[in-house]
Amino acid sequence: MLSRQLLRKAPLVAARRLNSSSTGLNFEFNDEQKALQEAVRKFVKEEVVPVAAEYDRTGKYPWEVLKKAHANGLMNVDIPTEYGGLDLDMVSNAIISEAFGYGCTGIGTAILTNDLASTPLVIAASDDIKKRFLTRLIEEPIMASYAVTEPGAGSDVAGIRTKAEKKGDEWVINGSKMWITNGGVSSWFFVLARTDPDPKAPAGKAFTAFVVDGDTPGLSRGKKEINMGQRASDTRGLTFEDVVVPSANVIGAVGEGFKVAMKTFDKAFMKSAMATGLAGRCLDEAAKYSLERKTFGTPIANHQGVSFMLADMAINLELSRHIVYRAAYEAEMKRPGAYYASIAKCFAADTANQAAANAVQIFGGNGFNTEYPVEKLMRDAKIFQIYEGTSQVQRLVISRQLLARVKQTGGY
Image 1 (cartoon, helix red, strand yellow):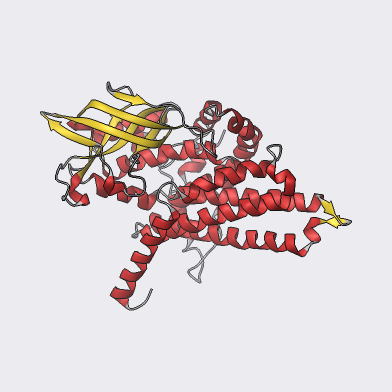
Image 2: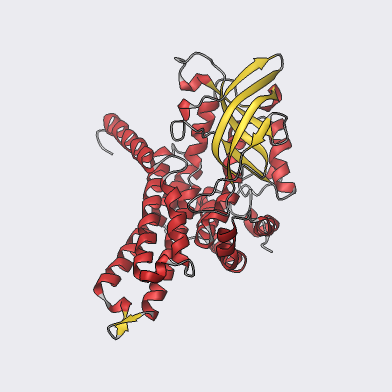
């Protein structure tokens, strides 16, 4: 089991990481980070990698792995200490996410979704909500969901149609959500709903955020979706039919739910760390195979066509890793994070997909076969260009942030 004492030291990491060098720049993890990285990699190697293919084949929810991760302090790591959590910094979060991405992004997604669901509560919820819902995640290995996406509104968060109407001291929610990770197993849900019926109302005032107990009457869960990849993850639709939620479960101020969701997205880029981990796994598998497989009397690693693909994979992996940790550092310093977070999401997602495609190509026919790991990696990689804002949306965010900087300062 990992030492919680070790993990509790991690909030010091970001503050020291770029200030420990006389030059003002340091790309080395400190001792606590290195110990954390070693511990989580060991856990993933022993508990995730050996079972990942079987969970992918069956689509069974990885409860056994999640229970072990919870017992080892590797879930819900950014919940504040006053609610029983470890309050780890963003760089340490990225270390954990990258390691799980290396092992299985389906299992990693299940774990990271708890962080995604709890982040808006940490940002904006009352002390009462935090005590009731965040402590629940610490006390036992249960799951939570971030329920924002809808059948007709994915990256267009402002287009959601689920509505909530105030009736006395309660709110009544009606509508539907789609592609909700952990949807079939979650104990509670973060839900964004329209509370201003005026279609012309600005997004910043039209939506309200709620936390909804999973057993609330009127909340129903759809069938588990059979997706291309990340099949260990549980993804479902949700239906809200006159779901009654007390006013005490409103997160932040009424009408400011969209702002809460956007602040969450600014911090919720750990999927980019997981994509980086997947790219690293692709490179490892492809490099090892290229040294074993021979054609024309020599290992295929000696053929320029293969060696150049490996080189490209290594280049982009290093760049992906650097921007992910830069984004984590910026978030930890509480600077406006959309610019670096979007670059990290976009570049890491594209890198993972290219790395997976190259790995399959290097494996040749074997890469197209389920007996080898790269087939799964290629299927798992695609979703990174889609969820939590498509790569196209990330490019929109990047360009808008860039142009705003140029207008303000005359340069990027």
